[in-house]
Image (tube, rainbow, N blue to C red; front, top):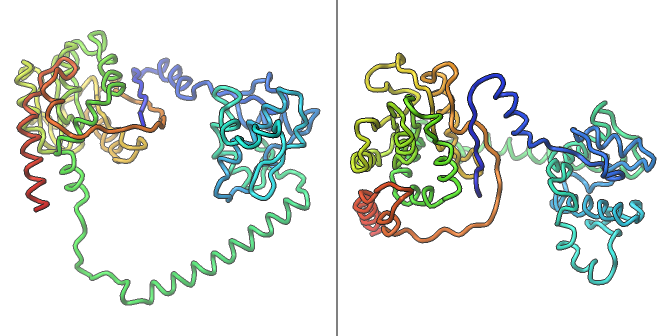
Length: 393
């Protein structure tokens, strides 16, 4: 997985431009007339539904609770796209007994359906990107999203909805029974003084391990995106706050770009090694490494009077939000960032791809790490590795 992040200045004109960027200028091509382009899903669906072909996409999709709804919907939409391109009859493509049937060329093409029809017919197809919304529309029975009204349901649609209601009523009855059993069972009642895990301590302790920092720095698209964005034009003579600095790579990039002062803040034990890295690279007069939580601590004892021009942070976790760090970055911004300040990043998109992580070693830290000497990590890695082996024993 990679997180493609971009940065922008907090001005009204830039906000307007970047809002357009974030939406990716998403377009929607109707099934029946793909040469037409609409800016919303609702408009494209309406065009199909009321146009000459009167094609109601929502009513043709598989049941919303089907375990393969998204896969089947991708197949259905791409089959329809190909049918229109080839001049075939859309009505021949239907959902039946857990499969999308019709619309293929027969023979080998039908046998390799999952291969043929998982490939988008239209690049960045808005329908495929909006499958969750299509699922919600199917679930609610709405096929005219602009007016939020159900279509003229066929007998099949009515029967399906009746079955859904019966299934939900059954699930509700079962859930009610289980809830009663849970609340009346003494074995499920936790002790009054049971200890609760300290999630913050666990979180920061996990980031004291060198392996996670090596993984992040090995992620070249991620690190180079920050390096390319950290330019003298934006950072020269600026006061910068690095939230969750880790090894200090973002602080070092800011200092190298000409920042006047950089506050590198992290609540992990790695900050002690970060200070050594900063000193070894000659930036100890510019970068102040501090241990603590940026949203609650004082910067160099100056409290809330300190204001920063730029906040940099690598707050994105697995699936973007996993680490739940964004809240800390936002609170830090409200406390320390000057009016008209800049955040790096302040927008993100998620892309998924299979990846392989190499085993942990000290060799990574011996090499040039994006132009910086981080060999002080080697004894830190060895210490943590030996500590882990002792814990296992």
